[in-house]
Length: 254
Ligand code: UDP
Image 1 (cartoon, protein in one colour):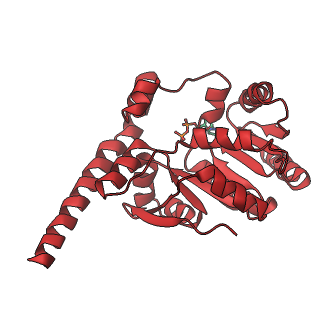
Image 2 (tube, protein in one colour):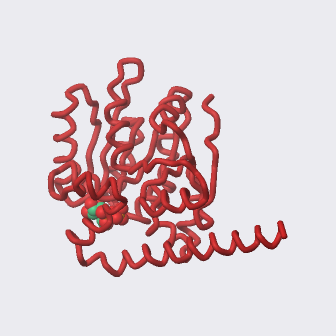
Image 3 (cartoon, helix red, strand yellow):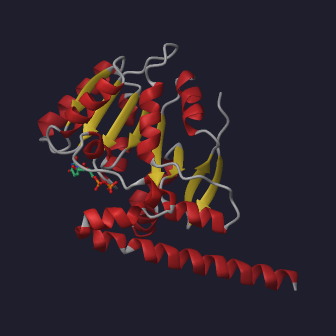
């Protein structure tokens, strides 16, 4: 049984630090343990501070990974040696892993505009011919279609379920439905289907390497500016918390 990962706090939200996330997830799946993965970034952390329902879902998740540059910088500020683990990259690793002969995992893609999950699935099917995608479903459906998704999940029992409905919708959906496939990895992938389908692109490496992927996102999708005000607020909270801790430590040691 894989050990529970070490847990730390990012402004009150839990985060798990592991050397190798895919490795831990494979061990868990081999033990038939289901896993809900949350990909934590600064925006989500700030949203959870004012949204108790989201905070609760995050706290109940089995694995919370440092998806965003802000979260990584926060952890570094607190002395942790940590590397960013973007959710889209973990999802891609898991797709590669899903075809390993010792544990072929059926995969399900759910979310995005009509046709997008299907296009993303075709991209991956070409990249990894052995991939077993047992279903795709877009994220703008009627209640009847939602019932059909539940039925498909129950019948096909995928072991890797990617849900791209955006935050916090995807986190709520996973919590509500994960008992349908109790042995699966469930991961909220945000807009990853749009990227895999070729509708959007990720930032160039030099921006990613300098913790600036968010700048590229803002440049490409300027309408996000209001949501992204969470980033400077996160930085401010992080600095104030750090300074307060320094003051308390100095006070205690003097
Ligand atoms: N989406 C969806 N159903 C909805 C609302 C959104 O499938 O009712 C999809 C949308 O098409 C997009 C994704 O959810 O593919 C959200 O992407 P975004 O990049 O905004 O994700 P976030 O930044 O929240 O992780």
